[in-house]
Length: 464
Image 1 (cartoon, rainbow, N blue to C red):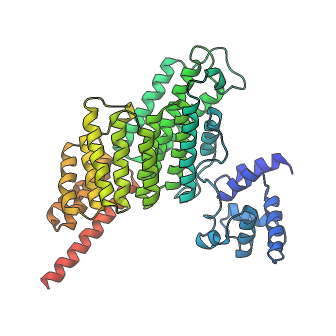
Image 2 (cartoon, one colour; image 1 turned 90 degrees about the vertical axis):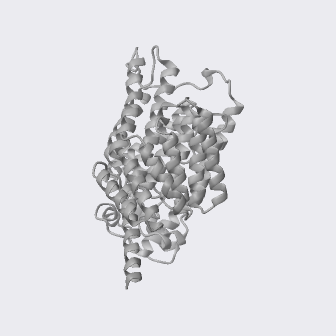
Image 3 (tube, rainbow, N blue to C red; image 1 turned 90 degrees about the horizontal axis):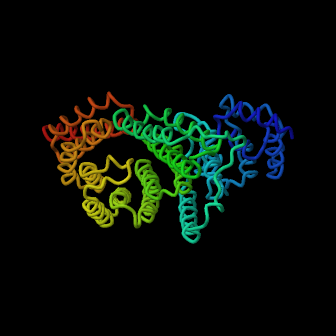
């Protein structure tokens, strides 16, 4: 086949999951039509091989007929039940977490990062969420890579060379000052996310990821060497974690998974296990928000394993995420034990703030998370005062979180029958929400409205 035509056709339809499948297999539109026709005949359905219909599936949003879908699924090894369970194009094996078969090396990390940056999310909700087996495979892959790394710790740097540039300059422009700017830029974006929400920073995070990816691809000769490369890899992992969190805040759960799983590779290449804890923790919280409690528990347990031997503040983060995961799963005892461990580790941290990206984790945040756990467990009367206390102590600059916690505190008060306090907090949450774009916050306000409406109906019923 003509590779140039395949590349041209792929770029022309890069936003559709079918385009991802074609690129991965090196198929043109005609190739897809031919493959479908061959597998349709094997299923006993005669079918003409017409490239035009494949083009319309990608560009016009035309849904293939059932026979064509079954034939394509057969060609891709997708069970028929998947086609029946998920409408087109959601059953296509596109954007599934991390690219398969990549080594846990710098080159493998950059290949995964390039894949994230090259694949534009399809539709308003982004790429599909990886199923539970895919997430469990990623966890097993991470654990195996960590074990292998431990066995070979101390290996000479020459055995793990940095990525080679195609045409490296004599001196790198990425010196210490440039790295300082890049690292400070991630912190600035995190603080903007605190104020404005994920929707406001998501595209800027993607742009900075592209910049760092380009710098890593060019190579880092000169004085920086491997140390500079590790710092750049850490910046990329940090940005991937922030990108995953911003995507979660926007309700783009598939994209959130993809960023975080790629960030884990980058953190591994940078040798930064605390940042890996943040990435597993972000995946756990994303799974809680996406109502996938078993995935949340699996990711949070990976965070706890990664945090072993790390700073107490990092272990507090991992335990707090595990508590939220157990609360979502309805495991009250396990939740409360994890919450107690989070408080113990935060006390042990004392005045040590931990890594720079963990500036937001303090007593107020842990109190809020405890309140959210109790609310999820149906213990609203205990959750309400904790959420109130967290709001009193939370930094005023954390506008998005203040709005979210006010909405959840209002929900807790509404569930205990304190309608006046619920209305007061709801108004505060709505006022703050005007300053930040966060679909997650909008969903919390919708839930609150439902609680207040239900409370109002019950009150009218009692009065009549």
